[in-house]
Length: 560
Picture 1: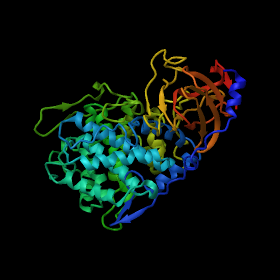
Picture 2: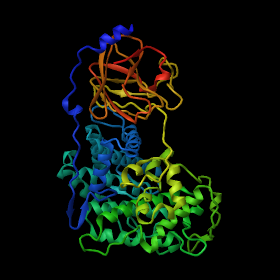
Picture 3: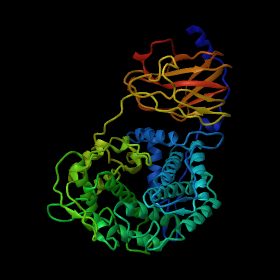
């Protein structure tokens, strides 16, 4: 097709897109206090959520880039599988202890449900709401037995956090029946909880306790259960394990002795297990800060400053070792009745792991990075008093914690590693009969599986009347939209950016071959990240919809 034909086609009349897709309204957070408990109050307050939403809509960095990464995770995990159905891994009726292959389904689904609940509040886009509601409702309906302390506790934390966010948004379609469903779900899985069973038990082994108690803590907040809340607060601070040598509590797990200040006992095992404890306790600390003294019902304990900020000493020690520095390490005995001793933390093979890039088969790694507490401690003590922790946060690069916990001014002292590559890591389909997507095969499209060396292209998407929402990173030179498409019927494609800005129109003629077109986005070199929508009027197959630089355009350009 000649350039003149493309230009003429671009000026054709297009089917109007429904107004509610173009002018997405921002959800509003409704804070409530019930029985002394503040909602939302698991991980985030209304103030936290609204601040993040405002930063994203204003395209302020680094919130904007952090959101792009979170957004990638939220949709990749819950792909479309039919109309209003998604490929969740569950639900299952029970998660028996020791069955990690079973309980991982709950963890991953719950994490994606949480990410979509959060993304719905940040953007207002209905497909996030649908994914989140679909996931939490299915699991709450089916799950009856929750014995797995690690994955089960992690799943319970994130599922409950998702419910807490949805319950606080008027436009989330959360119903009173959903609140009742959660209460019924909680009653079922708590029916056997006692001192030797359940998420709240005090005698779990190290990070088992953190994961299990972390789930119970989130549940206590959602339910407004004062007794359970107080129990977990006691267990996370001073500990109540009959064998204190294996207690995860701040006052037990983190050594407070001259010469070994901050040593985390479980670091003698590996680095991932103590990282889980650090992450979970950080989130518990934020939640406890939101709840305060429960309107005078308890004496508030600040986990960030508890016992002369012992938790911070653990973060600093952990960071120093995982940045490659040598640290003094005290040999510890693991269990009163055990002859096992942990002595050299340097023997571990996961030292210095980058959590943002970690995709454990049963976790989203970036959700378990022990970096979230940095922003609170910067307010409390200043970054100069935690030099290794600061460097560790920078080494992790921008992540979800950047989006969720930054207060004004809390990132200026950080030198994050920014992603200056270009391309999208996915293309997601929102609606349409038979809508689906898959990766391209080598040689299937004009330029192969990789359009550039930075990101693999997500290739073929089939849909009818579709809106897609990929996230793009900044490009090093003048960015163009690369669209390679095929349609047996011919179709109109309309591209929107930055929530509602009309960027480009393009007509794909009826053809059996893919056609690559480079559309001038009118953006300048070094433009900030772009979040784009795609609307199609008829059936279309789309391959490699992403951003490229002007220097990489090697076929016909369409300048609109």
